[in-house]
Amino acid sequence: MFIVINGGGKVASFLARTLLDRGHQVALIEKRSEVAEKLATELPGAPLIILGDGCDVQFQEDAGVGHADVFAAVTGDDDDNLVSCQLAKTAFGVPRAVSRVNNPKNQHIFTALGVEAISSTTIIARMIEEETTIGDIRTLASLRKGNMAVVEIELPTDRCVVCEKKVAELNLPIDCVLFAIVRGEDVITVHGDTKLEAGDVVVAFTAVQHEAALKRALTGM
Image (cartoon, rainbow, N blue to C red; front, side):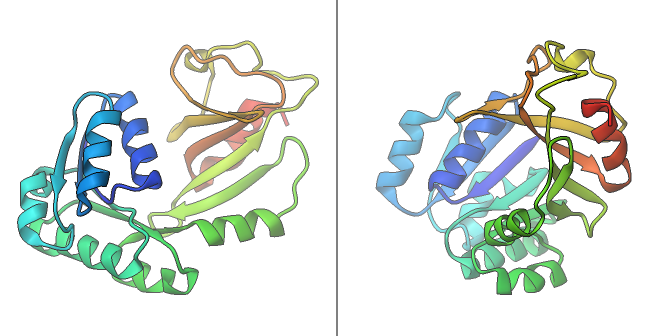
């Protein structure tokens, strides 16, 4: 896939690095020259970095939004994120626009305008409210009008049915993709040869109707 990211802060940098490590093409739009220069030196694979305002049609065109599969706005300003996503959708017809939402009160506005909105505040609040036990599944974010979700599953510390197995060897339900593991203080990007360990917290992207099947496949429960 080809993804254009509006923003160059920590969230944008981490997102870009993750996507590049997985073999995707990435372009970034960042209006602060010192941040753009830092991205150019730190990101692998020499991705296209446009110095400019992501809310400007010219800079989006320079970044290649017209042939992007996804436009992701992850700046710290909700207004900029919304405007840039709307511009990507209306001016360039980007198939998917995904945005970080800094103020959860704005989330319904993004959703109403057809932008897939993710609020870290909402996710954290949900995690606090939904106290879970080992082996349970926790929904971190709902996407595509609730049809898809980012979920978190903690593997048991005993009787772990998938431990020491490679991810490529797992019999996962359809439309379920593991993309990260939280192991102690480390966050690990998942590849086919990644092995799971007892106590790992697995973060996955799944169809909502397959959440229970995903839990059974990973925990045996």
